[in-house]
Amino acid sequence: MKKRKLLKTIQKKFLIYVPLTLFALFMMGPFLWLISVSLMPGKNVFSFPPAIFPTFIDFKNYVDVWRYMDFLKYIWNTVIITFFGVIFSILLCSLTAYPLAIFKFKGKNIIFVAMIATMIIPAAAGLVVNYLTINKLGLINTFTGVVLPSLVTVFNVFLFRQAFMGIPSDIRDSGKMDGASEFRIWWQLMMPMIKPAIAVVALFEFMASWNSFLWPIIVLNTDKYPLASALSTLNGQFSYNFGWIAAGTVISVLPIIIVFLLTQKYFMEGISGAIKG
Image (cartoon, rainbow, N blue to C red; front, side):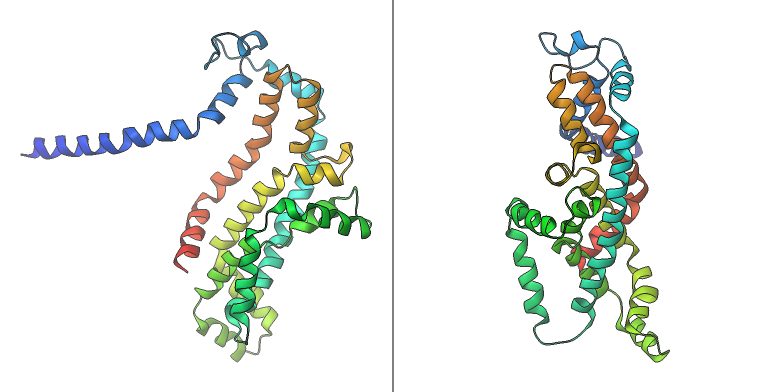
């Protein structure tokens, strides 16, 4: 009897995990192929029929592309853009969401719905307006000009609003009874209680800023490009050497994978909290 139950349990797990594993490998296929190509020697990349796995592992592409490109300079540019993008997005988006979630005033829901409605406008539609604004402010070829247009996004405001709404009103009332100002209640009481939402916004903004490609090309000169934009110059000059392009791309996505692994726990909590809210 026990053997039958054990056999059924194994069969159920097999039927669940095997399709899920195959589906996961299928979804990860392009990235796995990119890693494979980055480890292939040049002749192996363009062989026919196309090789899926390298005949032998070779890190020459990584060494060559690292020597050719000034990776440290481009990574430093990316770190500056990402750091200020993440920090100011968290502060400004949470400050925008706080009154929409906590305060009671006429037209609050109308303002929120109007903000949500702007999400249907494609980001490309704002490129010209953003460029004219940045140019008028004298911020062309500055990191401030890259970061400024994306500091407040409706999606992040929505996530923070849902997180603030999940906090009991007694917390804010206790702060007011102690004589704390509204800013102090927001900073010292509310923000520590929405760490999962902060982690989600930080991760999204980190990915968006780190992978920022088109807008930096429009605003910055070549020597100030972030890593993703700098890789585009590699593609233009060495389009025949796909191994170099693949190696550079793998290097550029490694920080995103590390940050995701570090914030994975908070990320899942924040997403589930936003959905429930």
